[in-house]
Amino acid sequence: MKTIKTDVVIVGSGLAALYAAVKLSEKKKVVLLTKDKWQASNSFLAQGGIAAAYDKDDDWHVQLEDALRAGRYHNNIQETAYLAKESKHTVDTLMQMGMVFDHDEDGRISLAREGGHSAARVLHAGGDATGRELTTFVKSRLNWHVPIDEYTQVFDLIVTNGRCAGVWAKNKNGETIVYEARDTVLATGGCGHIYAPTSAHPAVTGDGLAIAYRAGAALKDMEFVQFHPTLLIKNGKVYGLVSEAVRGEGARLINEDGRRLLAGKHPLEDLAPRDVVTRELFKAQRTGLAKQVYLDISMIDRFSEHFPTIARLCEEAGIDLDGGRIPVSPGAHFLMGGIATGHSGRTTLPGLYAIGEAACTGVHGANRIASHSLLEAITYAATMSQNIIQEEKIPVHTAVPDLRPATLRLPSKKAIQRMMFQNVGIVRTEASLTRAVDWCQSWGIDFGEAGNLDVTKDEAERLNMLTVAWLIASSALERTESRGGHTRIDFPEETDEWRQKCITREVNHVESH
Ligand code: SIN
Image (tube, rainbow, N blue to C red; front, side, top):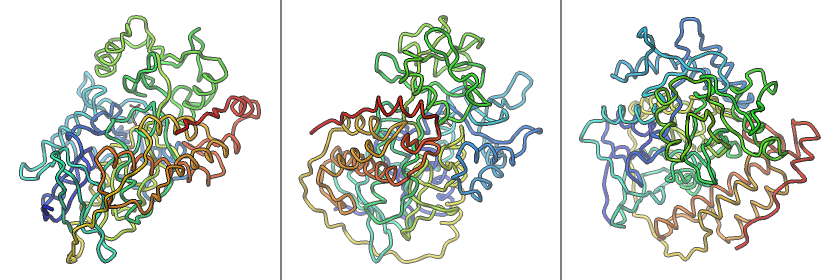
């Protein structure tokens, strides 16, 4: 087994991973591992931008209040305040590094409206290609000597004497490699692909979450999953996201008869926080008010110029933008929970850090406000890097992992995705969650003990997906209230009429195996 020694190993290649690599490599020897090509991340796909109280009439206190309201007051207030207060500085730092955000005709930074925000405060780059522009820019600032080992899949952490001492992985040729490191950073993103439909990149299968869990690190708030209201879905095929920024420019959610679906439902109407909009669309679909939901974009001039990525997705889907309507439906988008961390990115396992969507700093509460994910990625990659650079040096004792041959009985990815959307989706009940937990357990795997198994890359991914599905379903079963991204219709905030309709229509079929 080959061993590579480094100071810090970063797992993932999204914005948090890349920014941490830039910062850490100023002082440390860093290796970055990713199981696919480096662009395979949700950060790269992100259309929405970075929220910052940038306008002279805006105030970070208002941004904070908006984030707490959207997060249904489940947030870690101290960290959410830090994120909002730092947001202008975070953007300024990026611009000092050379990042260019979109400007208006007068040369001022363009600030857009997105869901949950009471002011125009979202910066974009390349219109709706902020994620691609930002990740490419940050990567360009990474010193050429920092290796990015692509197509290298991490299977498990190496824990010796109660401390994380690196990871073991399989490279593109299937060779096992030990990465011995004093500090290990999980920046593997969320777990969108345990659901279908989802806006997530197919590589986002919850690997870091499952790996951390197996190594004994604490996870929290796993029941809070955000479903974005507007995925472009036609004939059952998901083409991608239609950014909230489109509604920020005036687009409205309507049914096939042109009836507005969010009018009068929330003070911010179509720009209400995502959990509110998603529930309203789900309700409209389930009660027959909307056979098909559309975004009415007829009022947006030069749509393709403003939103080139979305225009391209529409073209792929055969949608004529001159018709002024884009068919949309909700899908899994973001995990508010994750590996429990604090300001420094430290987890409960010494030597292990987590940042980005894989981490739960508490800044998103029960429902993330728009354009706080790229902001969080940069902010906490910076605080963590500073912490790692300053910390006391502790010698690491690595051991070669004792790999165990295993024959696992695992469901297909499709079966997991279908089961999760049906039972642990936009609305949940005790019955649906119990079914989900039982289904996950029926595969006979002790999820906490399934470490260091010598299985294939595909088996490892499916094991991770099943583990995270079980973690989300079990956490959701325990939370007997409705809050943000976790809607229990048996513990409702909604009217009895709505509750009744949902319960009678509840899906009771679980894929058998
Ligand atoms: C969007 O553009 O609607 C998504 C942005 C985000 O996830 O905050």
